[in-house]
Image 1 (tube, rainbow, N blue to C red):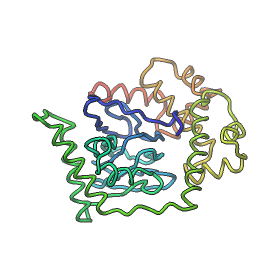
Image 2 (image 1 turned 30 degrees about the vertical axis):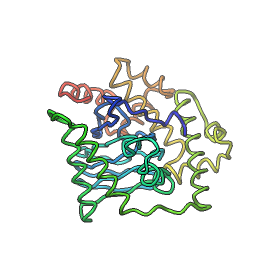
Image 3 (image 1 turned 90 degrees about the horizontal axis):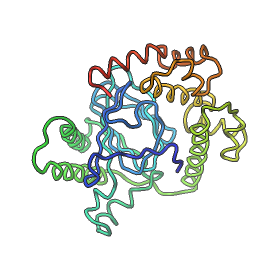
Image 4 (image 1 turned 180 degrees about the vertical axis):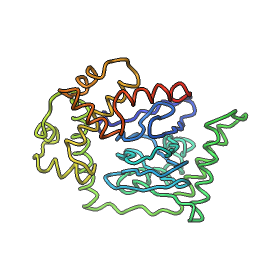
Length: 303
C-alpha cells in the first residue's frame, strides 16, 4: 500500500480507538481526509449520509448514496468522495478490527472478523433504510452519531463498543464473501499499479512532470497508464494531477497567508493565471474567494 495515500487516524483516546469525522464540501471535523481526497486506511469504516447525497468511488466503482443511507468500506480499500453538493454532509466512523475481536486469538477474531478483512472479496456494502436488517443497522449508526456531540454519560465507551459489535454482526449475517479467482489477482495488480502512479503524483506534484514520468513509476507504458487511470480513478493522469495540485493549494489557502502567486508556484503551476482559471473551474470560486469563505467558516466555529 502506498504511504502517500494512507490516512493515519488520530484517535482522541488511544485506549479507545474510534474516530468520528463530520465531512462537508468545505470541511472535515476533526481534520482528516475529506471531500475529493483519495486515500486508504487500516481501519474499517461506516459512512452515514446525514444530508444531501454523495458519490463515493471505491476500487474504481461509483456508489451513489442519499440522506439516510450508509456504506461500509473495508480496510485497505482505495476510496474517495467524488460528489458532494453544498448541502451534503456525512459522518464516517473509523475503528480497527481489533475492536470487534474482544481479545487476540479469540474465536470471534478467527471466525467472524479475519475472513472479512480482504478488501477484494468484501470491499464495500451499501446500506438502505428500505431493507429491514439494513434499517436496523442504520439505526445503530444514528445512535453512534449522538456521541459525537454533547455530554457523554458514564460508561459511554461500553455503549459505543456494544453498538459497533452489533452493527458488525448484522452486517456479516447478511453478506456473502466473493470467491477469490483469477479476476481477484488482476484486481490486486490493478490496485498496486494505481497506488504507485498516484503515489508518484503525490510526491512530485510541485514539479514539472510528464505522463511518461508517471507511467515509469509503475513500470508500464504511457498507454497502459492512461487505461489504468480511466478504469480505476475515472479520469486521466493529467486531470488527476491538476485536481491534486488544486487540493494542495486549498490547504495552503486555508492555513497560510501566502500570496496566490506564491501558492501557484508551490503546487506546480508555472503561471498564476493558469492556476486561478484551473481553481475556479474545479471549485466554482477563485482562490481568494475560497480563502474568504474558509475564514468565514472558521469564525463560525468550523475547522
